[in-house]
Image (cartoon, rainbow over all chains, first blue to last red; front, side):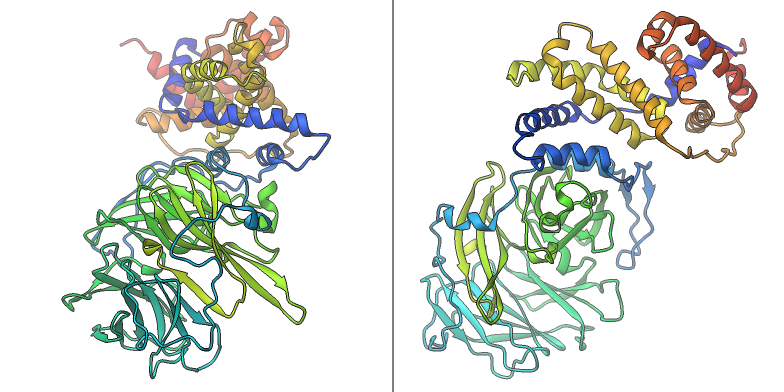
Length: 437
Length: 171
């Protein structure tokens, strides 16, 4: 056997094998953490260093291997489009290392009271359920900063409260609108309009005047059990509505409604899991409870222009928002080992670079043992560095446990956390209009 | 562990120069990209923890020792070694990616130590003495393992022999 050609052949075989540029930084960080763990080993074996060591030694071999570029089959919603799926940036294990390298100290509900209060348009405590709250028609607002919907089940009238930028709650009267038949959507970025999805149309309610305008959407029909989602575009001029049939897993195409012109049209992405960018991009996150990985699909002018598969595992709780970064609620794919294996520690806020998809920051947000990633609510960007989220701790009130929702501002660059507000009552589901805070 | 910025800079500089070569070695040793990345990462962590002492010494030799020993240990610890399915290509007409698969399949038929000596000698250009030092065996063992590995490749991976023979033919 020719030894020189064996050398050449080996070199040819690995010619394209290159290491991640971050390998040194990740190794250094791991070494630093291991060193720190060694120093505190007599105190506790469950520190962050243990996480790193345990993860890398004991992680099950569940990663998706890197594959050469392939052409994706066209999706039902983009039948005319064929887009190359980018190779996975790294394996699941490699991605988890990146995640660990940018991971911050896990959020702790107990520390909420000790955080500095960030002055915003929110009161320190949210109490939307005041029975004597005035009607919005009697006490108009210039803009709304939060909306609260009652938890009552069954076909009852919706009890909706809005919080003005004067920190006072009003009752929003929506005659003829009952739970189960109509779905309340988000408030526009400027805090003046509210989306209400009816079985066959979309209503946009002007919160400053109380008047509503109806938009008929050809082909749109809401049935019992359908999962509906709507979202405003960043400029507040359009609403995207998507629905998922009870018996049909794949999302139906969404509909876009221009609330200034009344024009409607179909869009290929799902409003429930899409992030809208001010520059016109829309990133759809195809993840889910059963997904070991997810795909980020980028649309521009309703055309699929990029598709990348990430080994991050479950990415849920949509309404992610793009600014200079994409933030999602996530659960790492390899969360069944190490510190992240603890059920309390699974979900977290993950900030991704919208172009390279590399993780910039990861904040684990623990919850009670039965919690999962859906229980962290992401409300949006307060500024280009600060994300607003809420998490719930369950408090024993004697006769029942009630959810005590904590609203927090997280600067993902510095890791600093601030207290925004809290809702101690669990009677209403509160959403924030972060742009107005 | 020396946590100074200066130490980090010198470590990063060293890794920047070596990382691709080390990953290539690890890839040929393991035949698996993910496992190779793990192997490299674990080795670099160990180097980083000793960087204060290694930086002025021989970090190259140390990291290679770790990679080779870790792979051999890992291989020993596995009860079942997956055997790659024969790759159905004609070596004479195959392109570079096919040739790469043929090489990987051929290496998969070797024992961990045989594989290690082949990679050390023919990819890393290590002398018999250097290979012996890295693997912690005698020069005689390197010689015998190399001979056994080449014989096995010739007998059990004829497609590789054909490829090498074809490429080595005079024009």
